[in-house]
Length: 299
Image 1: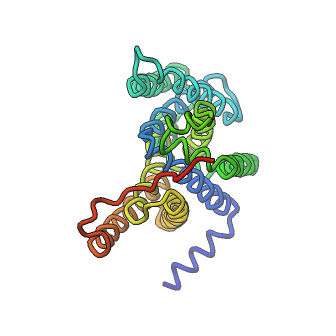
Image 2 (image 1 turned 135 degrees about the horizontal axis):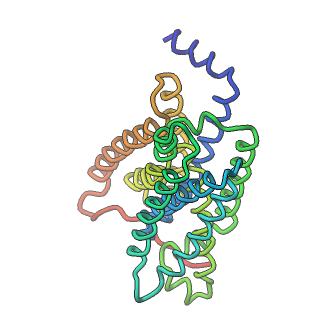
Image 3 (image 1 turned 30 degrees about the vertical axis):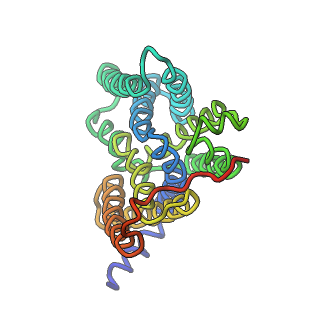
């Protein structure tokens, strides 16, 4: 045990480890805040779709030899999120079909561009790192860390400022519209914030595992709590804890960071699932399944 503590203290002396832990916890926090809304609105798959769009954007930035690809990737992903929101409301092509086409198309085009215009001697390693986030979180520069901190703070601020409206649109969009809430505008805000979160999360777990950061914390919290506020708080705390645990284990054991974080999320979901079954059996027997409480009124 003392050897493990000494090893952790040794790694803590390196700036890149501190950068990774700070950014990883911020990413987990932002992902969990939006995850509750996306799960309840049945938009869980949007994480996969936008992450594949971001993969294609990274390929374009690599072909153009853009040194700092974050602004390019972020701009393209936000644009696609807005277009997906608009196109998904079309009656000719449903939202899930549009998402599937965009997801597969972006992934294929991105990989094709990286093969045709490859400038790296280790293409397979670059693709693996982008898809699974194996080392990217441990190679962040100071500029990238501050950019991630700024974007994460913006996501948290937007969520806090528009919490009541997001709450209303999440539970009953039709009633929110009838009450005078501009549901379309808030859906647009949600789509943009989700795009920012997806781009940030790719640094931690890669494009193929992004949905785990969005889905697992929300579903875990819903096993135990039933109010929107308690689920959101529990999801955030549990997500940050799993990110810290997973990243620490990955750094100490030398395992891939993204996969280790997702494994921690899966283990936590199992614990919450069992705890939820126990709580339901003790306090909700014969009362039906636990469901999230909707808004009593809209502000």
